[in-house]
Length: 477
Image (tube, rainbow, N blue to C red; front, side, top):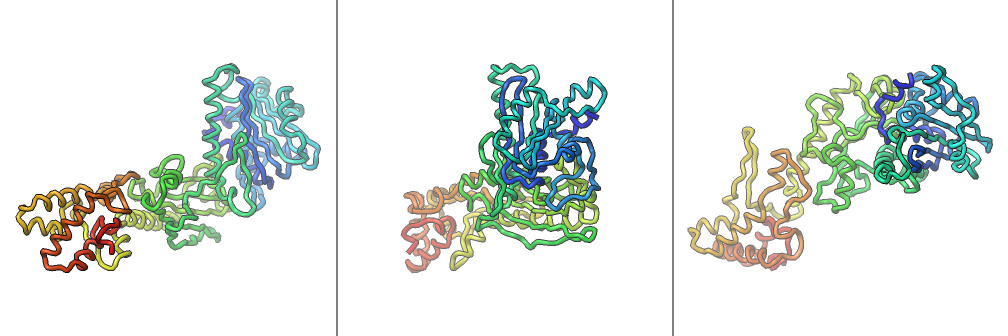
């Protein structure tokens, strides 16, 4: 049993998230995850100011599977199988001690797995080893209630010397990974009026919002309530703003710890706790592609439907119920389509800000499964060069420069299912035009005048031509 519980596939961040679940369920408002290096005596602890447990409740909590998935739970209880504390802890350590109090009187129980395996008996110790007692005294000093979960004899660090700097650095590097993971899993608890304070080694965990709900450019598609066994599964699709509407810092943060591609898809929540982040749930026809990077969908499942969703022991994976799969596939395709259209037609969005249609130097299309990219023969500068027989070298140079600056990278990328954040901006991007941009515009101006337009008409046409609609120059007034 010990070996089985130790091999359930917990990562360190997953295991600590399971302990934080217990703290949240106990009404804690302040939770600290502490890492302390001491070679093979290193330890990790989760300390909270929750309601604590009576001695009887502590013994129940330390008993494997004392509470199964059918046990009635409070509306704020994040548990499910009754093995989270033990399975998460046994996956990371050989010595587990829990110390808890409800009104100033602390009681303790310890599992020593070396003792359990050596004796073949489940001996739950009332008195912790001296090294554990010393740590607990420090962590509970001045506290009247709450719970401390202490891990010692950590997996992977047995035999490590206290002076081993490389291993010490690896140990503390884990804090960054844990901090990021907890900020994702408990994001909803870390925001709002009654928000939870969660720290890792004294550093406050910041919530990561995968839906950028505070950004004015995010699009919320119509939400739906999907019926399941008399309850409702809430689904809210989002289309995030593209890189051009985000600062560099916003874009990097929105990509998440695993990058844009791996964070598209469904986000499944159970009682506001994230179970699964960024997955298309293995649903037919839904797969990760770069053009869908802006598509994210929040799914809130009632805890009473855990069995239907097959929530696992680690609360890290789910399988969508058969009754909901067609609905989820439909919603997934819808948000994917909207996300791809947002990237593909960003030029059309810009066009709505102007009085007339924008003129683009390139025409990019996909027909018959093939992508074509051709120069727009109706563009005024192209017409001027063609009509003049290419005799004016200045016009030719201006046309070539314009074509170089406006290569349709975004459209080609979408059609070829590729993506990067560093799209080239024509002539350096929006703002005052540089000398090269002005030269190209002047040649266009000359061509338009030669075609019989007035000066005002010529400037108006330039203003509605890419990329001059985003640049400031003589055509702007």
